Image (cartoon, rainbow, N blue to C red; front, side, top):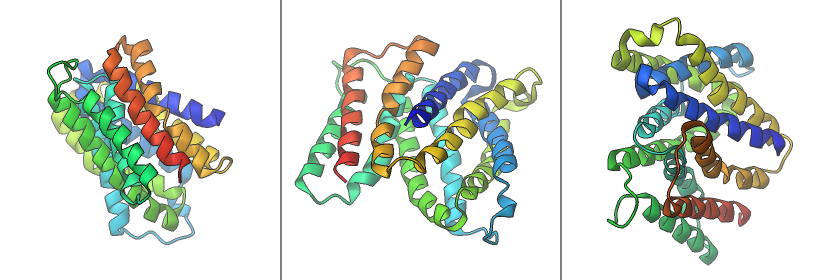
Length: 270
């Protein structure tokens, strides 16, 4: 459980660090740095070419890699105008929907209602709510949709390639989305002064948390893993507060809390 908490802190600190790079390389450039360096680090660490299964470019693997890249790109684009904690809570609706779509029990409708209430408190649909950029909110929800698809494809990839599937998916994401980031940002991505920051971003946001999560998954039950993951929006909000000085309003904190409760309840009632 301690490793999983460290992984969440590392992931959200990486997101806050990435936002600090936006003035230099923009969100697409930060995504290119993260995906490019993450692909290199995970390729060396996991050595996917040594997997016992013969490599084959299957539809689930391609979908997994594309969703991984799109999820990161849209999330970083959302961060440009949306507080970190709010963006993570909105993005969290995606995987939460995967958990609730197959629900048939009456109790699960309570979690759906809580998630919907949190969404209403976070989206700019009422004039009395704090101002949230509509484009940023939609980008965060779009990232959540790709996160949901990432989970669906990831299960199939994991069954075929195991831990090496993460490295293969990251390589596919880098091949597709790094050129997009370079095209949007230009030569700033190749600035020697920014490359160490790109490597640090990759380690904080991908290599370290993914490795710690893999260890945690082998030591704690899946239900406990899911319950702890429900803390991620709060961890993100705290990272935004400490690193970026972002202060969610009381209503936004309430929305984040509702999403967390919905995730926790859906996990514990499995």
